[in-house]
Length: 104
Image (tube, rainbow, N blue to C red; front, side, top):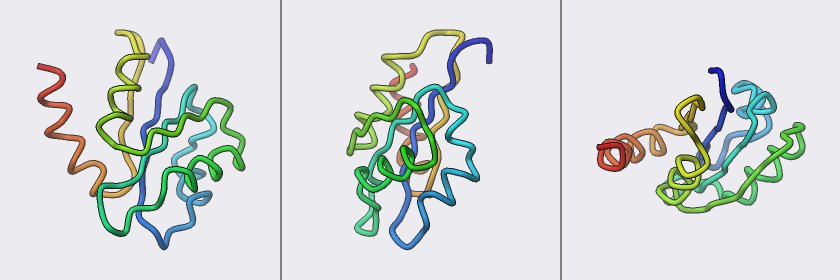
């Protein structure tokens, strides 16, 4: 993208968050927004935030609720920016219908 790269990410407990964020190359994003995956097994956003900072992410914002995390990403983005929402399938599955409604 010509603009900023914004990552919204949440995952389940039992994964190494540093390993997952490293595989996503989260440290190359301009902004990382962590959330808690909408599942009883969701890893707390605070744990993801600490992992993102540990791997060298410069700008990390913790927004525990997925929909609010997406709102924060979109509010800070313009037409040149790329917003990536990923992590567990629970995150992607919940994000898809929410984004469909918001982006209408």
